[in-house]
Image (cartoon, rainbow, N blue to C red; front, side, top):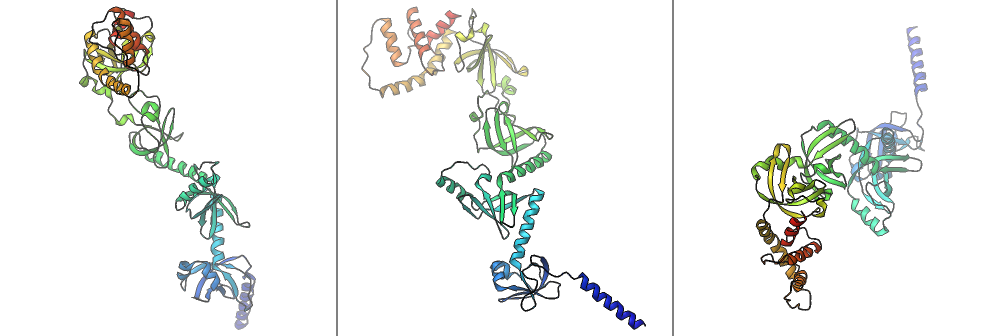
Length: 455
């Protein structure tokens, strides 16, 4: 009775195994163990009633290095070509299994919106070729980051050829196994990569850190600096202690700079940087470099109704109040000064802790003005004389009267500051000085006299 029960259980087990047995179908991917491998192919144990047979042609498609690395006992995915071959065994393909696995991984990347880094191996007129395992991936030119559009064919071909060999962060945007289409986008990949890098930097950075970066973009309100995948903004007010009109006066695209982390806005994912904070503030040294009563040279940076601001050095401006123009204040400072004019002024007040400096023009004596004019105008006069020698002009005979003398001075673009001129001659010299183009020096005795007179 015990023997009959044992046979019954044995038969039930065989029947159960028969029901559990899943017949292989074309397109299935099974994991097998390599039983043998050689020049004629390979044999794999798939855990089925028949072994899987890999042809020599299929091994060649894997590539010489991959095929040579297959060893007995290795576990490998196999693609079922037929449920049963002529000899009863199962034809399988390792190459097709690799490709199928690549398609599955590509679909997973698409579903999870993950970034994959691939190497560009070739290009055509439409874009870049990037292999994804055994699958041929493609990056259209429209999906290449910062790739100009509407290029001429030759220029487009040259730019695409320059990218071959580079590794790019890519995002899968289309997977169509039936049509064998695997499309990548570098633009989307870069966008996600930068977002992750920005988040990483925001978590790692602290206010007050000093970082090295590369200037990536210039705009009217500042410069963007790439800190290694994430851009921070250096506002135009943080580029220099001095007054500037555009960031190009301080930095250029592609330049490597050290920046100071000014503020971090983790909620808005923004990084505020500064260049000038790594340079000494000129106001902290003003008491050491300057003193009340000292004569200094400066450039007018702004003219307002109550006076003018004069820059002594980058980042150090003083106020030339309208009451310090002359003994009698002019009605409108714009009548006498404009932005860019270079002046000799005297320091009358220094308040470093308030970042203020008072300047005076009326306390500069005529002798001091003329001496400064001679020093300032000397190099400019030499350059004008050299330029005048290169131009063929008729010789101008000297005239005895003051009018002819003024015309001669205008043709030579110079004024004799050592002669004692009459009031009429001084006014003529002032008109000459005011008519010069592109001048930034208020450097004639005539101007000084007319300045006092206007005041």
